[in-house]
Length: 299
Image (cartoon, rainbow, N blue to C red; front, side):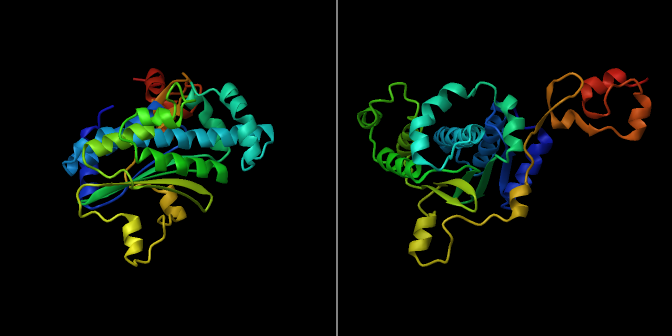
């Protein structure tokens, strides 16, 4: 999906002003991933750093997959009446979750996950020295899972080739968890330090923070803290920031008449009275797409 000219102009103005870009969602659909790719590409093109795009997307997609899976796992455990914070439950019931949960239709899962309060939020902060991407969700993560992830990240950052991954994780014959290690190797190939990845749990959110420097002048969060700057490990997001968006991504909704999943730019939550007067035979006046509305309008 290419960015339309009006959105490109608005993005350009927002980036020039240093405004953040926030993508809100519930499920990791192809539309969400496409929006992320478009916004990240446009941001990197603005700073003339497009060589960062392939490894950056590889890493972010891997982290988003993990983030989305955490939400799904929590939802499944909630449905079963299990405690997602119990490490024994994670070990014993992971295979059952993987077998029963259907990841093939994310949009079909959206109403359930949204009702249960799960979300995905991607925030892109940027400047001349680099970009920072934060991925947040609402999921309970066991301390054992965080320890395993910490160990994996520590190993992955030291790899010089992918064969070392399989030496450490011989049981992952299909390479399901290899993407993060692969992206770290790609960062090394273009001369970037893969150490600028952190994660934390705070205020009910699990957050991955990826810092990608453009040059040696970029100071990481860790370096700023070591220099005595009074900083939180992860910037606090107010409720207003969590709800608001600097630049709106494409959003999708389902038409109550035809059942199509359509872009919100051709979707009407509620038809105005003057439009209803011209479409008296229309079976619904709420949640209608432009295709259906055009078929009922009087000439």
